[in-house]
Length: 273
Length: 117
Length: 131
Image (cartoon, rainbow over all chains, first blue to last red; front, side, top):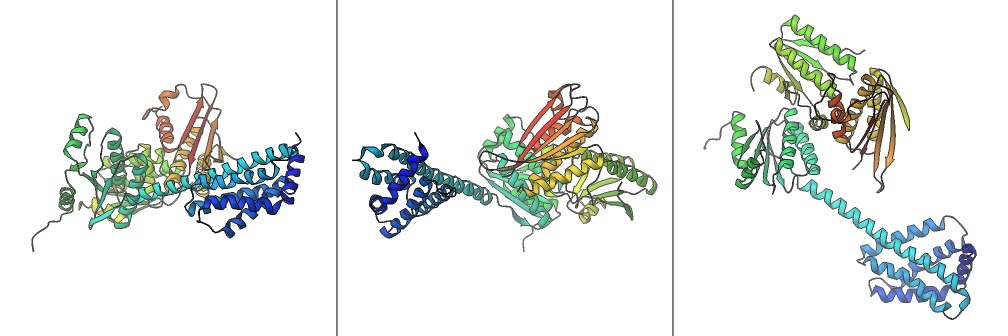
């Protein structure tokens, strides 16, 4: 099959039937839009897409394909922002086939032309789906990073004493972030005592213990002493049964106990007024 | 070859590493410190690595060796000013720098040497 | 791809600086830059001290999902490593710390590949990806 020739003939056909095709296409898309966009706006979008499709088919210039892909990506994000599902957007693109088919249905000699158009429109519809997917992936990644940041606060409890209340699982990614924030805060505040509270860490297994030990080692390299607090009874039992040794790292049941220890080590005492 | 200067202030030797040290310079520093400790009878050594961007196993070993040598001369060594990125990398490398105390800065390092901590 | 000779201590310093710039230019975080340069320092030194000298190559690479990374190659025509498994074990040392260098460097990077055989030289390839 002479693809180039076929495409050019379809391009010519589309040009000749411009109003009918775009009109019908608009009708079909508007039906699916259900009032979320105005008819005029739909018509404008489709006119642009139509022009690009014709340019690509007629093989006139090499930029057309890139522009068409870009236009579809923009259409996809715009629709996604307006609350359309990716399926709805794709169906809107696919309906170009229906609009053209209605015109060629009765003439048997445009079959190969229609076929290649059909294949092309399929790819275009798929592209809008993929563009939508990629945007969602990016949003999820951004939110994950955001959540990680938000759930890793480092607070100053007293002069020279900072606390890191950990909430959630302590995996390698979070450990990296904890170490960075803890160390940066040590430098910024000049603190020499850090309390790492693990009340909010659901499971403490050998891996988590290693992450904690790493964090303490890093803080010690900056001259800070560390206490691990928030060891719940079940966690204590798990730690012992797993044979995890915290060595010379002080451990306390509660953050309050750890603060008292830190103050004592700093030579401070709390007295009633 | 760059030679790292050693300052003596009171009973303490101060070393500030400002540049990306080549292996020969590292070994030279070790030797110079040993000489200076023997000659001066200093009680403490402060090694300031605030400007150091990379501490690999070679430099790490040099630091622990200096700690051991100092102890032979009855002096204590304090490493100060380690950058967070370096500390995290050393922890990952598994280098413990045993035998060398650490502090956030030279001031705190001096407090340790003068027995306040 | 840039090729850097490793024939002296000064060359090792040059490799460190080159890798540092490549890492910074390609979006690696400060901690990741430090890790990569430290790994490069270990591997460059191994090339010099145990490999009798060799070369390093630095390449910027792209992953399938579009992430940018820095890839380093260290090669030498030295005596090779007789027991790779042992060399990669933590704390193993020929007396001058070959073991710590290799196993440590491996922990600092995202991808690590080592090829070596007695009499056939050694080649180490590592990659660190930006996040």
